[in-house]
Image (cartoon, rainbow, N blue to C red; front, side):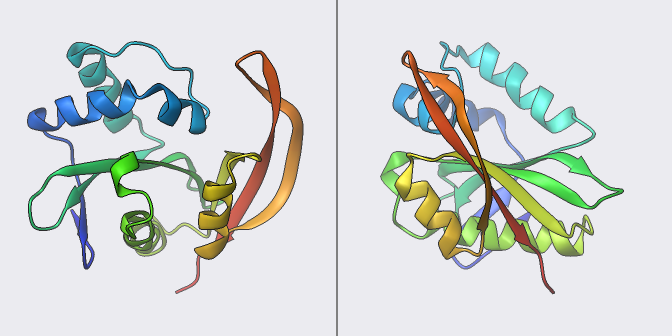
Length: 171
């Protein structure tokens, strides 16, 4: 468990499944995350959570309110490479929490864990170039754009560019 000033990053619990199911079934949110939206039953969400938490090359945390323990979203580090010491960031936040500082706090806690517990040197991510809000957020927390894949992601019968971003972790 990782505690910050306002949020807790913790393991998932059975009572989180309805909130996580709502996030997984939010089509615009999933499209912004470059996910292929599909219907998610409680069982499908449980299977997804089990896959995420049992993978040897990833860590997954539910983001919860520090006081109420209400689910605010989730974060993950995937494709953890312990030799080259980098991983890929994934973050999903309830639209009601956008702009409230939750993502900044969650990333602060996750990056400290990545540096001090996992010994990582760098975090990378992919984001739709047209997702200006996300791109501004990532730049605000120290990510730099290092590349662009042109016409890389097909969504709604349109091709979209994907930005490649990275952040070097410092003690």
